[in-house]
Length: 217
Length: 217
DNA sequence: TAATATTTTTAGTTTTGCCTAAAAATTTAA
DNA sequence: TTAAATTTTTAGGCAAAACTAAAAATATTA
Image (cartoon, rainbow over the protein chains, first blue to last red):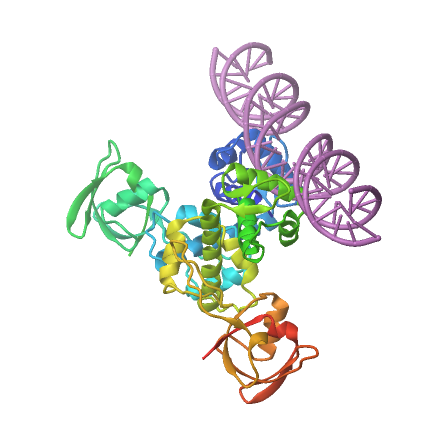
């Protein structure tokens, strides 16, 4: 499989969760920064290889084979992210680009030994689950911070948006995975939330609250 | 730079040491398993980018810029080999293919942090020197085992041929970097050498002796 | 040195993955 | 339910990096 094919599979995999009735050509094009016509070309190719179920104009689905391949790419990506952060001292907002390249190195031995070296981590530096060698994913209960009731205290366990801007915002506010947050007030009008972190008070927008995964105790 | 361009630079770099009066088109084609006509195409491209000095029919040289680029690729390759062996438990005959892929991941931070993580190694698992971040190479005195006089005891410090076949032969004979070897007899007729390793006797061909680097004490 | 052999280059093609522009299908709205 | 808007596909092209076949240059040797 080529790097390009792998990137398509990965994107279709991620979009499948959001649109379970078939992934749109345009949505794929948007994620890959390419044109819809290029996507159509590639969908035909992936279909020929039986990695996707594709009928024109009807959106696309991953086959089991395609899904397993996609999960392995996600596995590679997230394991490399753990490596970069834990072993090489990268910050969580610095790992994405490099992991995009590393994920395409195809070697079973490499990735399984890396997994072992890292002690079989279940989650990457952004809190996303890492599929194991069989493609199994350990999902845990998580809620968005925006869904938490006033006066509850929760722990930050992941981010939905992994953009550099968002991650650096969290750095600035000293929010990281494991940070305990108490919800003090919620503004009905605009969704703004007042929270307490390490006994200091902070007001965050609903956009922030909609991109932070947390767990109740 | 593309992966293909990098592979050409690397091959020209390695061949430059052997043929200092310009590297042949055919030699490059042989190393890259491609056709001479493809090499000519690429030499024009590399010449346009000022990575090589190229005049048709006259062989090719790396420019300073090309040489530095080539060294950085070699640096990447050898650092990854150290990582694979020391951290992920690969054997020295298993690292080449994967390192061929990893060497093309372009990130200064990645490679310099990896270097640090590995404690700034000077040599890779085959005894080849690793260029530092500036492209400087620490060369050490080495001789081929075939050049050593009878009755001398030397230490194995590297291999000239890094093919799987040769490395596995060495594994079988329990020869690795650091192994002490005493030269007992040399056969003038065919270059065969009788040696002593860990008080057991072994006869090796001249081909083996011509591919083992050793240092005298 | 001339003839032959080898090496290298040129010219023209292929494949992959992208593009634009236009046509076709589907969806939305009047 | 037809018209308009949007989405998707088709058709035809382009650039990179390979290829084959033929031409040109260089090297070898008789």
